[in-house]
Image 1 (cartoon, each protein chain N blue to C red):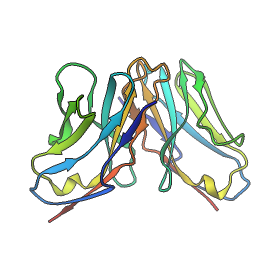
Image 2 (tube, each protein chain N blue to C red; image 1 turned 180 degrees about the horizontal axis):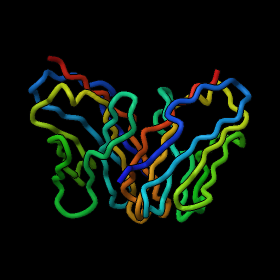
Image 3 (tube, one colour; image 1 turned 90 degrees about the vertical axis):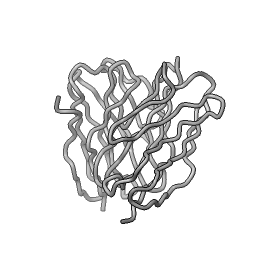
Image 4 (cartoon, one colour; image 1 turned 135 degrees about the vertical axis):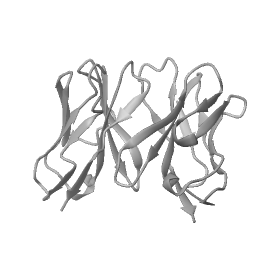
Length: 115
Length: 112
């Protein structure tokens, strides 16, 4: 079984400040890991993903995430928040070899950016 | 590429009516997924197809829900009869190889 926990359903930062959104997963086999962003009244947009290789993954809009196997984490960061980053962010996992190919999502973190 | 296309974008209907949601996946993708998003339950996978064949429908809430994929470029999710608790945003996603999923804009359903 696989699961995803996102610590903090709401995170508020000031414009220009560091963004850190936390994601921990559980998986019995090595995972594929994803971050999606959802802007109001829109669908989910793929931000970045980890499949194999380098554990530090860069995505769109200046975001990056690091896969840490020992900590079972895949936290999302951005050095400097912009007002346009305000959205809901979802971490998700698929376990390798999972014939079901089912994404398991975390509960989401709503990021608010203060001017 | 146009991305995943869903229609309608908004649907308002009365309890007991039939609702049909439509999805066109990205061309060449062999997996198609239907999700439901609500405030209370978050994102839930309802059903997914591989090469037009339903693989796992364990997330379909009850017999009122049905999904079909008659060909590689079209899928429907039908609710009959609809109930107020079905009000949600329904997303379709597609994937090549089943790992990285690309989502459509969603259909916002309101059942009165």
